[in-house]
Length: 236
Image (cartoon, rainbow, N blue to C red; front, side):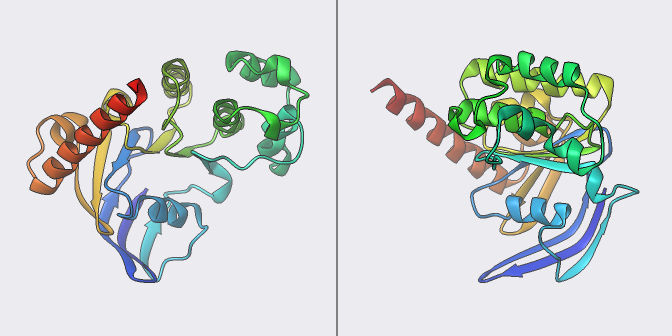
């Protein structure tokens, strides 16, 4: 996916990306402070927002090929199973119940298959949202802070699922996250945003371990302080 001269003004905020290339089949990390435009960019990619200018070259992808999962997922007023198969239904794909059960089993939700989805815990809802985004084998997946505030086992599960999908299907991922440990572990490329712009792109080592730009160094320092404060508060 090639993005060039992309513009979107929303109130006092302006997103303006001169150039961004999201190579297909790779896991891309998108990082930056709150309010820098990460979610706005993801909504432009999905077509939820219409750009004021510029171009997104989808390189053959259609809206049916793109999906997204968020930190606070929207679930239908229905069962866990009906939520899971919803992406298949709207695409006219007949669900294979055995395969759907395997997805649920993998996330520890099989016994809750017929339970009202919104009665799940927040962590279980995130798991359901994540596998729901994968059941139709999408080509492009946006993960917007889904790894935030998860227990270590759930985080490891999500990372394993992403690796397995890359082995099987080579999807393109856009991982929006403040969890830099996970970004470093699973991303092939990292893109740093500041004030509506993509400032620098590079490998995880270049961006997170050997940052050359002072804005990135400040961001990493602030993120480390925030991480340590959260760790301290969790012990109280």
